[in-house]
Image (tube, rainbow, N blue to C red; front, side):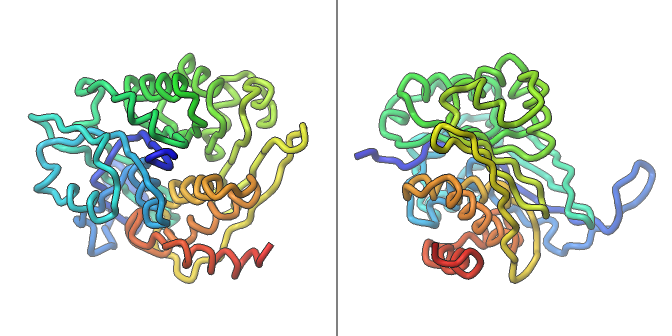
Length: 317
């Protein structure tokens, strides 16, 4: 019996969402429309997924570094409140935790400004192999190049099924290393821009050719905003393709964290031993729940709430 359901890598971020009434342009003033523009929400890809899964009742192990303001910022309390394991949280001194400013235009597209802080590669601290021995699954999101390399090496050493949340960070995932990641992982999550970049790196024309590049690859999910998502997956020695529609939201507040929620819902499905198609539907369902809250995890559902919404849209299969 493994101690943790999922070990998760990725940057942390103290998020501030700034909504603007018009596109930001040099020499022009854009009016900020949200009164809570200076409110800090704790997040980052890995933390968002960890919180979503913990809210569903599963044990997550985020691998992160924090700084001098870990306690004073309230982040330590946030970690404890959401029942995230602190076993893989290491503290460095002389620097603060990472910060992120998300500038959102009326179309809900984002400009992201990020300060690495304690997550900077120069503060890297060695990983404990026990973290990986005690985990059932692994999820790699974007972190520093050194963190990414160590995480991949450890998951490979302990033969963990590893899923990859692709983020367009060419410093963290330069072409040679990205190919190494794509050769190793069991599943990939990417948006339309990211999957185009992946195909360029692999010199392929079609997404389903990724399965030839990596014989261990089980699924590729391509998200496409309001158009839903597409999943490619192995089934009966064939590569199947299916479109997953958007699950209607009761209220549309913000898309921040919705992509991370999709990954969390999908991985939740895998933990529950659901097939890839149903896992994708669970991902779409959880993503919609997050859209209804201002923060990246503020409206994360518990297990009962998730399934109620799932059945409402997809029915009982």
